[in-house]
Image 1 (tube, rainbow, N blue to C red):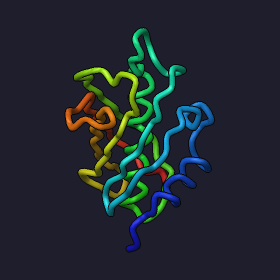
Image 2 (cartoon, rainbow, N blue to C red; image 1 turned 180 degrees about the vertical axis):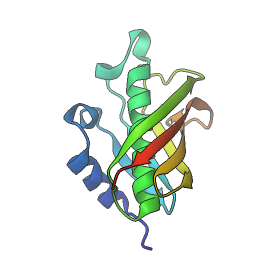
Image 3 (tube, helix red, strand yellow; image 1 turned 30 degrees about the horizontal axis):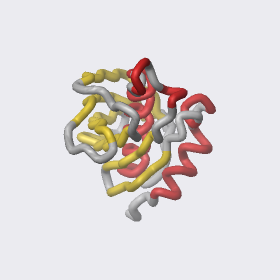
Length: 138
Protein backbone atom coordinates (compact mmCIF):
# COMPACT_ATOMS: atom_id res chain seq x y z
CA UNK A 1 0.00 0.00 0.00
CA UNK A 2 1.30 3.45 -0.93
CA UNK A 3 1.64 6.01 1.84
CA UNK A 4 -0.82 8.89 1.58
CA UNK A 5 1.08 12.08 0.75
CA UNK A 6 0.56 15.41 2.50
CA UNK A 7 -0.81 16.80 -0.78
CA UNK A 8 -3.33 13.95 -1.03
CA UNK A 9 -4.28 14.46 2.63
CA UNK A 10 -4.89 18.17 2.01
CA UNK A 11 -7.08 17.25 -0.98
CA UNK A 12 -9.11 14.99 1.35
CA UNK A 13 -9.51 17.92 3.73
CA UNK A 14 -10.68 20.23 0.93
CA UNK A 15 -13.15 17.70 -0.50
CA UNK A 16 -14.66 16.27 2.68
CA UNK A 17 -14.51 18.72 5.59
CA UNK A 18 -16.91 21.50 6.50
CA UNK A 19 -15.96 25.05 5.48
CA UNK A 20 -15.73 26.16 9.13
CA UNK A 21 -13.14 23.42 9.79
CA UNK A 22 -11.14 24.53 6.75
CA UNK A 23 -11.38 28.13 8.01
CA UNK A 24 -8.93 27.16 10.78
CA UNK A 25 -6.28 26.94 8.06
CA UNK A 26 -5.50 23.34 9.02
CA UNK A 27 -2.93 21.72 6.72
CA UNK A 28 -1.05 18.43 6.62
CA UNK A 29 2.66 18.52 7.46
CA UNK A 30 3.34 14.78 7.04
CA UNK A 31 1.81 11.31 6.97
CA UNK A 32 3.02 7.76 7.58
CA UNK A 33 1.29 4.41 7.07
CA UNK A 34 -0.76 4.94 10.24
CA UNK A 35 -0.35 8.56 11.35
CA UNK A 36 -0.76 12.15 10.28
CA UNK A 37 0.78 15.40 11.48
CA UNK A 38 -1.34 18.46 10.88
CA UNK A 39 -0.89 22.12 11.78
CA UNK A 40 -3.31 24.89 12.64
CA UNK A 41 -1.60 28.23 12.03
CA UNK A 42 -1.82 30.83 14.76
CA UNK A 43 -4.60 33.36 14.25
CA UNK A 44 -6.14 35.81 16.69
CA UNK A 45 -9.48 34.70 15.24
CA UNK A 46 -9.24 31.38 17.15
CA UNK A 47 -7.89 32.74 20.42
CA UNK A 48 -9.16 33.67 23.82
CA UNK A 49 -7.74 36.46 25.96
CA UNK A 50 -3.95 36.59 25.90
CA UNK A 51 -3.48 34.83 22.56
CA UNK A 52 -4.46 31.40 23.92
CA UNK A 53 -5.79 29.13 21.17
CA UNK A 54 -9.31 28.08 22.14
CA UNK A 55 -10.17 24.57 23.22
CA UNK A 56 -12.82 24.44 20.49
CA UNK A 57 -10.13 25.02 17.87
CA UNK A 58 -7.85 22.36 19.36
CA UNK A 59 -10.55 19.69 19.62
CA UNK A 60 -11.61 20.41 16.04
CA UNK A 61 -8.00 19.97 14.98
CA UNK A 62 -7.65 16.72 16.91
CA UNK A 63 -10.79 15.23 15.35
CA UNK A 64 -9.64 16.32 11.90
CA UNK A 65 -6.12 14.94 12.37
CA UNK A 66 -7.44 11.57 13.53
CA UNK A 67 -9.65 11.28 10.42
CA UNK A 68 -6.64 12.04 8.20
CA UNK A 69 -4.60 9.42 10.09
CA UNK A 70 -7.43 6.96 9.36
CA UNK A 71 -7.23 7.86 5.68
CA UNK A 72 -3.48 7.22 5.77
CA UNK A 73 -3.99 3.83 7.43
CA UNK A 74 -6.78 2.93 4.98
CA UNK A 75 -4.95 3.95 1.82
CA UNK A 76 -7.41 6.78 1.17
CA UNK A 77 -10.46 8.49 2.59
CA UNK A 78 -13.33 6.33 3.78
CA UNK A 79 -16.48 7.96 5.11
CA UNK A 80 -16.51 7.72 8.89
CA UNK A 81 -18.16 9.36 11.85
CA UNK A 82 -16.92 10.17 15.32
CA UNK A 83 -18.40 7.82 17.90
CA UNK A 84 -16.46 9.08 20.92
CA UNK A 85 -13.95 11.87 21.42
CA UNK A 86 -12.20 12.79 24.64
CA UNK A 87 -9.59 15.49 25.15
CA UNK A 88 -7.46 16.54 28.09
CA UNK A 89 -5.96 20.01 28.06
CA UNK A 90 -2.54 20.16 29.73
CA UNK A 91 -1.17 23.63 28.95
CA UNK A 92 -2.11 26.49 26.63
CA UNK A 93 -1.02 26.97 23.04
CA UNK A 94 -0.18 30.66 23.14
CA UNK A 95 0.56 32.84 20.10
CA UNK A 96 1.90 29.86 18.16
CA UNK A 97 0.79 27.24 15.65
CA UNK A 98 -0.79 24.08 17.05
CA UNK A 99 0.87 20.86 15.85
CA UNK A 100 -1.39 17.79 15.92
CA UNK A 101 0.09 14.29 15.71
CA UNK A 102 -2.61 11.65 15.24
CA UNK A 103 -2.03 7.90 15.26
CA UNK A 104 -4.27 4.95 14.49
CA UNK A 105 -4.07 2.51 17.38
CA UNK A 106 -6.42 -0.10 15.92
CA UNK A 107 -8.13 -0.20 12.55
CA UNK A 108 -10.97 -2.68 12.39
CA UNK A 109 -13.59 -3.30 9.73
CA UNK A 110 -16.24 -1.12 11.35
CA UNK A 111 -14.46 0.73 14.18
CA UNK A 112 -11.13 2.50 14.50
CA UNK A 113 -9.35 3.82 17.58
CA UNK A 114 -6.99 6.79 17.44
CA UNK A 115 -4.97 9.19 19.56
CA UNK A 116 -3.85 12.75 18.94
CA UNK A 117 -1.17 14.67 20.80
CA UNK A 118 -1.28 18.43 20.40
CA UNK A 119 1.69 20.67 21.09
CA UNK A 120 2.68 24.26 20.56
CA UNK A 121 4.97 24.61 17.54
CA UNK A 122 8.57 24.60 18.73
CA UNK A 123 7.78 22.80 21.99
CA UNK A 124 8.15 19.12 22.81
CA UNK A 125 5.69 19.40 25.72
CA UNK A 126 2.14 18.23 25.00
CA UNK A 127 -0.56 20.88 25.29
CA UNK A 128 -3.46 18.43 24.93
CA UNK A 129 -4.09 14.74 24.38
CA UNK A 130 -7.17 13.30 22.66
CA UNK A 131 -8.56 9.85 21.99
CA UNK A 132 -11.19 9.07 19.40
CA UNK A 133 -13.32 6.17 18.26
CA UNK A 134 -14.65 6.23 14.70
CA UNK A 135 -17.29 4.20 12.92
CA UNK A 136 -16.20 3.37 9.39
CA UNK A 137 -19.19 3.85 7.11
CA UNK A 138 -17.85 2.86 3.74
